[in-house]
Amino acid sequence: MHFGDSTCRTSYLPEADRIDVVLNARLAEHYRGQRIVSRNVCEDGDTIARFTRPRRWLHLLPRPSRYATDVVAAIPRIDVALVRYGQNDMKVVTPTTFERQVEGLCDRLLADYPGVHVVLETNTWMDPAHGGHARDNANNDVYWERIRRIADRRGWPLVDVAARRRMETAAGNWDFYIRSRVLSQSRFGHLIVDGSHDGEMAGVKWWYGNRHPNPNAVRVTADEEYRTIVATWPDRLPRADGR
Image (cartoon, rainbow, N blue to C red; front, side):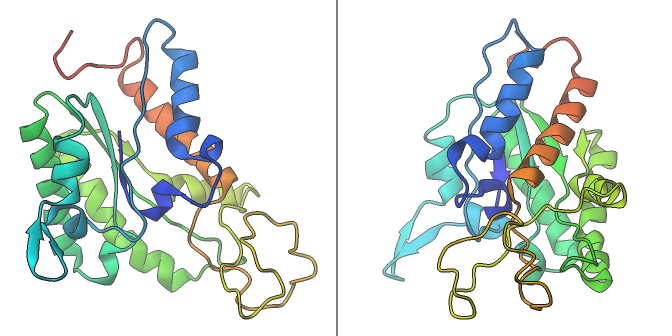
């Protein structure tokens, strides 16, 4: 099961290009003797706090959290949980609070789904030559370092998405993000997820810089998840009940 925000949900992509579908196909090829079911409970704009805290209807009536309704009440068993938060959390909480919230969510999963195997993930790194900025990458990495610290401390597998994208970019594979969602500044009235208009938009400052993954980013991320999972469990995906 995938937990996270819009960078993991990618609701703007066809279902076949989303992380749960792409990863599931890779895992099914490797673990041929197992039936594997992937679920994606990520949500656009989500933070850990927004996911886990009770909601309010009409600002008055309390409602259970999305974690309570969409996960605990709806899904009886989770064997492997891939947790990728931070892109929105870093806008509202300090690195220390973020670290505490990540561990808090994971501990809730461990309590609600005894035996679940937690896999942590980092997230965005952007090529400074194509919309990224060294300062933003450094700020992101302060939060990703907290993820790495938790994984090391708890002995959990880590999918270092940021490090993989940095490595891929150095090798020439830099195209990881959709182009523009801004409708008022362009004649393009639809979402551009690839580089098909890069030539004619050359020099337009806002053309690059969107942090939402494109299909290439999803494939590379799924590959890094696949490598981590198979390295951790070479022969068989684990079940929470140990069977």
